[in-house]
Length: 83
Image (cartoon, rainbow, N blue to C red; front, side, top):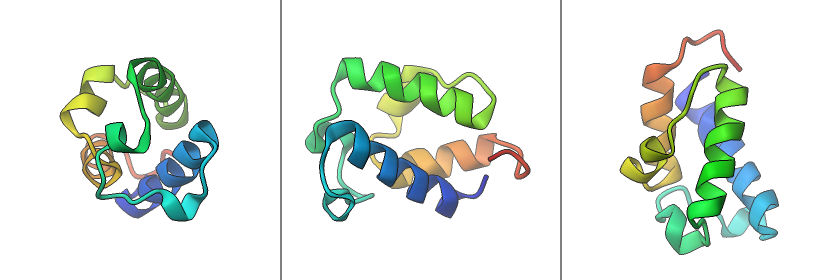
C-alpha cells in the first residue's frame, strides 16, 4: 500500500472514529491534537494491522505522531500489493 493510499485511509478512518469531518483531519497535525488518545491508539493499531495484514504496534503510532509520518513509516514497512 502506498503512502498516499495510507494517508487517505487514515484520514477517513480518523474522521469516522472521532466523528469529525474529514476536512478537519490534517495529515500534518499530531494525532493527539485531533483527539486520538491511548484507547483510540490501541483500536487504530489493531485496525491498521488487519488492513495491512501485519502486526502494527501502538508504539509505531506514538513514534510517528502524524498521519503523514505514520503513513510514510507504514508504507516503507509494507509490501506494495497489500491493501
